[in-house]
Image (cartoon, rainbow, N blue to C red; front, side, top):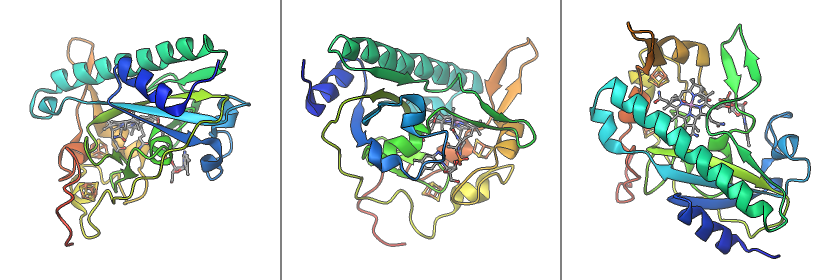
Length: 232
Ligand code: B12
Ligand code: SF4
Ligand code: SF4
């Protein structure tokens, strides 16, 4: 059975995604060896990337509410990826879901550096869903960085989406770099060791919460890109 990119996008919306784009596997040649789509699915030809809105209201709430919503977003995007893969298999397509958070296997204990089986933010850029900001997060013109990403790798060629034609950051902005309490950001990458030292904390009752999201919250584009702003 044949399926088009547009039919796939319609299905993604039915499953609950707000955005969906397609990146052909050739756009990942610059990804590190071991973290390319073909390292996950040898016969991969296209990466279908989708995103759902992360409720902005939680940014002004408690760490517990934000963490609760973040955990729900993981469940939601993982369910979309899982259901999508099941559905595409029924079309005779080989379809592999990418976990939206954990599990992943790569871990460098010295640098406290983990790496997903496929970087979803790099994938989203290649599927036309946005650009990377200096806080290293994906920024979409409509949803800003307030989204959660997911992806499914498929072994069929699909019509590719155009790359985003806007910029994530104003050239002179460095608000996130200057506001990070651990100075984990340098404008292109992140020191996971520094970020992890502050980003989550254990609670007295034996649980844990996300305790920092400043680089996300403080970004003037966190709710979307104000296209009317043209000056630096
Ligand atoms: C591990 C992880 C973390 C780590 C590292 C974050 C990071 N920036 O990489 C820690 C614990 C610090 C973290 C924190 C947060 N995270 Co996190 N995290 C992940 C996870 C599971 C893997 C990311 C990863 O592999 N990083 C390692 C690599 C990719 O990063 P790197 O070392 O900088 O990569 C370099 C090279 O390796 C190379 N590279 C690697 N892969 C590729 C691929 C291509 C094609 C190319 C060209 C290059 C390339 O390029 C980089 C250049 O130096 C992803 C889910 C996923 N599977 O993608 C979510 C994810 C990145 N996290 C997310 C979020 C929201 C957060 C937090 C905001 C959570 C919070 N506090 O509220 C913070 C933000 C901190 C920040 N500014 O990044 C979202 C981002 C959404 C968005 N808008 O971009 C993701 C995508 C989860 C999701 N499903 O939506 N996270
Ligand atoms: S989550 Fe907090 S500690 Fe981590 S990079 Fe962002 S501002 Fe820095
Ligand atoms: S705070 Fe400024 S520099 Fe950082 S991601 Fe947002 S626009 Fe870019």
